[in-house]
Length: 309
Image (cartoon, rainbow, N blue to C red; front, side, top):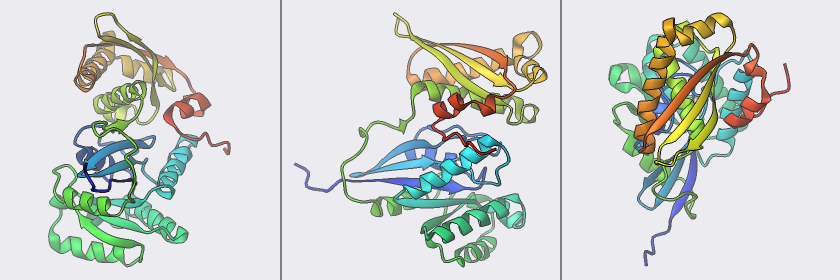
């Protein structure tokens, strides 16, 4: 019988939009559990990725980026991010060091300062994670680390490249040493805590972002309408892509349906790899001007519906 005590805890990953939070979580887990694009604010809901390190289970909570909210959905995302920090055993503040070195007073810098102030005001200790350090000269990193660390909020500073994996193992070792003893909350071979229906919708949304870039900024949502197990072991998935205007629907569908077909094909291939079986994916696009005001969507995403305007 193994006498080594097991440990288990939550690690909340905070940061400004596009600071590399999802990439860090995917790297720590060892597989893709959160979608990644070059667009800021890609992550809309907290996603739990589960990583094992020896006898310790680390539950990484990939939170939406924290920024100045304008829409109802923005407010829900920011609240979810702070909620994840409040409940975590370890809080990581992930910073795009390349962006901050180049534009310290830019939007990412202001969002980072807002997060640091929020942590300081609540007395919440955190770990500063300078990401993308492979793209920054070391002589520029040290002043940035000193400047951010001067807030007195951080217990440790780590310099990593989440995309390459550099420094991530040391960061995970720190997290493992700072979560409490206790039983694992998930099976050792489970990588994520997200329903398959929702994961499938997220993968399709990722392919929309990657395919359409700036043509369809944040005016779309994907909902898995049905999930039917087939007798041959395959699965049929029907999804609806909601957009706000008729013109946006035309962008999603494309001439002769070519764009939506390409999006579906890319999503299907990745889903088949993820689920290890054949997937029949059917996409439809609908105009819903106020999809961002629908409480049912927020419930599906695990977000609290803000009642304030």
